[in-house]
Image 1 (spheres, rainbow, N blue to C red):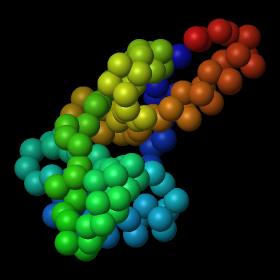
Image 2 (cartoon, rainbow, N blue to C red; image 1 turned 180 degrees about the vertical axis):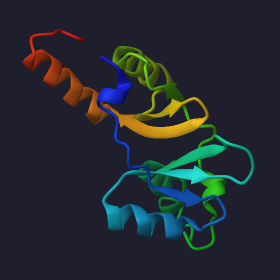
Image 3 (cartoon, rainbow, N blue to C red; image 1 turned 90 degrees about the vertical axis):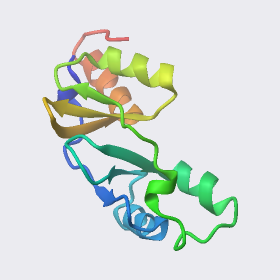
Image 4 (tube, one colour; image 1 turned 30 degrees about the vertical axis):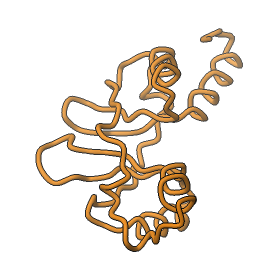
Amino acid sequence: MKVQEFMKTKITSVDADRSVYDAVEKMVDRRIRSLLVKFPGKDLNYGIITARDVVFKVLAKRLNPKDIKVSEIAAKPVVCFDKNADICEAAALMEKKKIARVFICDGNKMIGVISLIDIMAGALIMRARGSHVF
Protein backbone atom coordinates (compact mmCIF):
# COMPACT_ATOMS: atom_id res chain seq x y z
CA MET A 1 0.00 0.00 0.00
CA LYS A 2 1.60 3.26 -1.16
CA VAL A 3 1.43 6.58 0.69
CA GLN A 4 0.08 8.32 -2.40
CA GLU A 5 -3.12 6.25 -2.09
CA PHE A 6 -4.05 7.86 1.23
CA MET A 7 -2.29 11.22 1.28
CA LYS A 8 -4.12 14.53 1.26
CA THR A 9 -3.20 16.64 -1.74
CA LYS A 10 -4.36 19.99 -0.38
CA ILE A 11 -1.45 21.52 1.53
CA THR A 12 -2.04 24.82 3.29
CA SER A 13 1.01 26.99 3.81
CA VAL A 14 2.21 30.17 5.47
CA ASP A 15 5.26 32.30 4.73
CA ALA A 16 8.02 32.09 7.35
CA ASP A 17 8.01 35.85 7.92
CA ARG A 18 4.32 35.98 8.91
CA SER A 19 3.28 36.23 12.55
CA VAL A 20 2.17 33.24 14.57
CA TYR A 21 -1.16 35.05 14.91
CA ASP A 22 -1.58 34.89 11.10
CA ALA A 23 -0.83 31.17 11.19
CA VAL A 24 -3.34 30.61 13.99
CA GLU A 25 -6.04 32.44 12.04
CA LYS A 26 -5.40 30.23 9.03
CA MET A 27 -5.42 27.01 11.07
CA VAL A 28 -8.62 27.93 12.91
CA ASP A 29 -10.41 29.13 9.75
CA ARG A 30 -9.58 25.90 7.93
CA ARG A 31 -9.91 23.64 10.99
CA ILE A 32 -6.45 22.12 10.44
CA ARG A 33 -3.64 21.30 12.86
CA SER A 34 -0.58 22.25 10.84
CA LEU A 35 0.76 24.47 8.11
CA LEU A 36 3.65 24.05 5.73
CA VAL A 37 6.07 26.93 6.30
CA LYS A 38 7.65 28.43 3.18
CA PHE A 39 11.14 29.78 3.73
CA PRO A 40 12.72 31.92 1.01
CA GLY A 41 15.24 30.27 -1.26
CA LYS A 42 15.57 26.99 -3.08
CA ASP A 43 13.01 24.25 -3.71
CA LEU A 44 11.98 22.12 -0.76
CA ASN A 45 13.09 24.79 1.72
CA TYR A 46 10.17 24.16 4.06
CA GLY A 47 9.31 23.82 7.70
CA ILE A 48 6.15 23.01 9.59
CA ILE A 49 4.18 24.71 12.32
CA THR A 50 1.61 22.76 14.31
CA ALA A 51 -1.10 23.59 16.80
CA ARG A 52 1.13 21.94 19.40
CA ASP A 53 3.97 24.36 18.56
CA VAL A 54 1.66 27.35 18.93
CA VAL A 55 0.22 26.22 22.25
CA PHE A 56 3.48 25.08 23.88
CA LYS A 57 5.98 27.57 22.41
CA VAL A 58 3.82 30.71 22.42
CA LEU A 59 0.50 30.59 24.25
CA ALA A 60 1.60 28.57 27.30
CA LYS A 61 4.51 31.00 27.73
CA ARG A 62 2.08 33.94 27.56
CA LEU A 63 3.85 35.39 24.53
CA ASN A 64 1.93 37.58 22.10
CA PRO A 65 1.44 35.60 18.85
CA LYS A 66 1.48 38.88 16.90
CA ASP A 67 5.07 39.49 18.07
CA ILE A 68 6.47 36.06 17.15
CA LYS A 69 7.36 35.10 13.57
CA VAL A 70 6.38 31.68 12.26
CA SER A 71 10.06 31.08 11.45
CA GLU A 72 10.94 31.32 15.16
CA ILE A 73 8.88 28.28 16.16
CA ALA A 74 8.65 26.21 12.96
CA ALA A 75 10.32 22.81 12.84
CA LYS A 76 12.73 22.48 9.94
CA PRO A 77 13.31 20.63 7.71
CA VAL A 78 10.09 18.75 7.06
CA VAL A 79 10.18 15.00 6.66
CA CYS A 80 9.49 14.16 3.03
CA PHE A 81 8.73 10.72 1.60
CA ASP A 82 8.55 9.57 -2.00
CA LYS A 83 5.01 9.09 -3.31
CA ASN A 84 5.73 5.40 -3.99
CA ALA A 85 6.93 4.65 -0.44
CA ASP A 86 5.06 2.03 1.53
CA ILE A 87 2.60 3.26 4.14
CA CYS A 88 4.19 0.98 6.76
CA GLU A 89 7.55 2.70 6.20
CA ALA A 90 5.90 6.07 6.75
CA ALA A 91 4.26 4.83 9.96
CA ALA A 92 7.56 3.45 11.24
CA LEU A 93 9.38 6.71 10.53
CA MET A 94 6.62 8.73 12.22
CA GLU A 95 6.92 6.52 15.28
CA LYS A 96 10.71 6.75 15.33
CA LYS A 97 10.75 10.56 14.97
CA LYS A 98 7.63 11.02 17.12
CA ILE A 99 5.86 13.10 14.47
CA ALA A 100 2.24 13.10 13.34
CA ARG A 101 2.66 13.73 9.62
CA VAL A 102 5.08 13.42 6.71
CA PHE A 103 5.01 15.27 3.43
CA ILE A 104 4.93 13.36 0.17
CA CYS A 105 7.22 14.35 -2.69
CA ASP A 106 7.48 13.54 -6.37
CA GLY A 107 11.06 14.42 -7.19
CA ASN A 108 11.58 18.01 -6.03
CA LYS A 109 7.85 18.77 -5.87
CA MET A 110 5.79 18.46 -2.70
CA ILE A 111 2.48 16.85 -3.69
CA GLY A 112 0.77 15.85 -0.45
CA VAL A 113 0.82 15.06 3.22
CA ILE A 114 -0.08 11.93 5.15
CA SER A 115 -0.94 11.99 8.84
CA LEU A 116 -1.53 9.42 11.54
CA ILE A 117 -5.27 9.52 10.93
CA ASP A 118 -4.71 8.88 7.20
CA ILE A 119 -2.61 5.83 8.04
CA MET A 120 -5.31 4.53 10.41
CA ALA A 121 -7.95 5.05 7.71
CA GLY A 122 -5.74 3.22 5.21
CA ALA A 123 -5.35 0.29 7.57
CA LEU A 124 -9.12 0.04 8.00
CA ILE A 125 -9.72 0.16 4.27
CA MET A 126 -7.12 -2.52 3.59
CA ARG A 127 -8.58 -4.79 6.29
CA ALA A 128 -12.03 -4.32 4.76
CA ARG A 129 -10.53 -5.44 1.44
CA GLY A 130 -9.12 -8.54 3.12
CA SER A 131 -5.51 -7.39 3.43
CA HIS A 132 -3.63 -7.07 6.70
CA VAL A 133 -1.17 -4.23 6.44
CA PHE A 134 -0.05 -3.82 10.04
